[in-house]
Each structure stands twice: as C-alpha cells, then as structure tokens.
Length: 84
Image 1 (cartoon, rainbow, N blue to C red):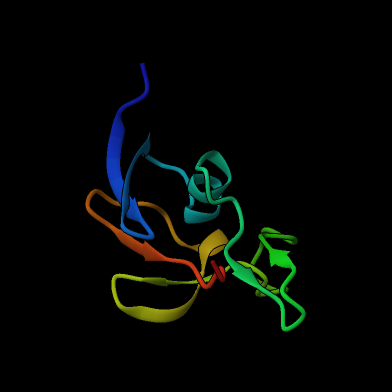
Image 2: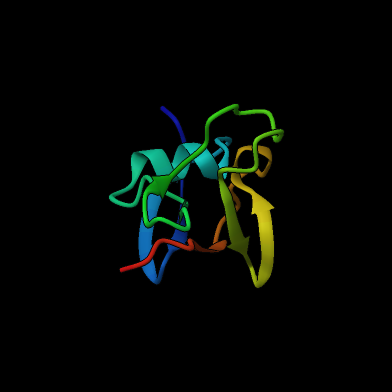
C-alpha cells in the first residue's frame, strides 16, 4: 500500500502518493498543465529531466521551480501559471 500525502495545487487540496515528483502530481490532478505559452496554449512537463523548463511552477512561494525535478512533500503549496 502506497502512503498518500496531501498537497495544495492552485488552492485545491490533492492527495497524491508520497515519493512522486510535482510534475507527476500535476499529471494526476485535474490541472495537468503547469503554465500557458504566450499564445495561451497549455504547457506541461516535456523532457522530464529539467532541461526544457516547460513545467515551471511556484512551490511554497518560490517561483520558477521545475516540477519534474521536485519531489512532493506533505503540505506543499503549488501554484501553476495556467491562465483561467
């Protein structure tokens, strides 16, 4: 049985398995995109190793964090740059 923790994505609590990346948590959530391009297209993790920087989010108040390179932790606050 995998332990679950609670994180907050754009103000919404989400239960996710412990030990996954923020990018994986976003993919599992209702907000799979992490930001939008200048033209308004949704963007998400592409390379999965921190090179493309398509998965940038704010984590616990720190802007421009690469979601594919950060592991979730209980209570983590994630804010995407997705335009509503």
